[in-house]
Length: 329
Ligand SMILES: [Zn+2]
Image (cartoon, rainbow, N blue to C red; front, top):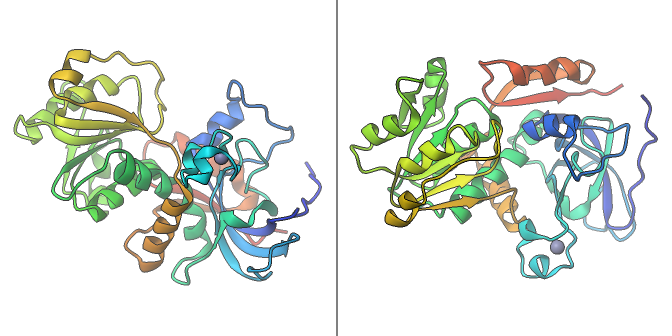
């Protein structure tokens, strides 16, 4: 279906998209999120990289032709949180592709402040694969869970783009990283990202028991859990004293039951995190540019095979990001 090409307004830029990446968020958008109205037809995709094609009025510091990656977080810049530099807490926070037309198309219009020069070491596919998952992982671990060097970080699940980012960020912060997954075949790839240990979990070897044993009955300092209902109670049980479970999503169900005695006796906490502040995004881009963090791409398909790319989410051997790339007709 044809959608009129968007024009950049004041303070905005138009990017010719060279690569876009899908997230689980896109699946929820496609299915409809209660309370979020989307225009139909709706273009999916929060992540993208490309070339600035036009700039709106008052944009003087970015020339057409510049290659950029897009920060999919949208904030109003005017509320109390934004003025304090806490854009992720903006009361009007939105995400490209969820609340607005997305990146999986020829042109996308975003605020100037949402684009950064694509580091020369990165391809367009890298630039599309990185922004959402790495800013999510960075804020969740560094800011919200406040991971310190020498702590243990457990990552529940191994295949999604966020998990591949979390392993790298946890290592960068100096943690010992253990990944727990129901798919043992993923161990070599997880270890290649820097994970120190891999635990296969199944009905006989549940998450909490495996982590308890691995940590020699001490518990782990931080559990990164995006699975949700089936694993949150076990993640809490696996915590050390002072431990934190950080939650960034609930792909397998939103309502969990937690034993509060474990929380207070271990002085543990469950913290939620989503997206990142503008400053945190810039820190991520710097680490991507230097190669300390790198996007993991599961598969890259041309734009006209986007539906096929999307179905890749259903594959049990998914590992990393699903990218669709130009050239666009
Ligand atoms: Zn705001």
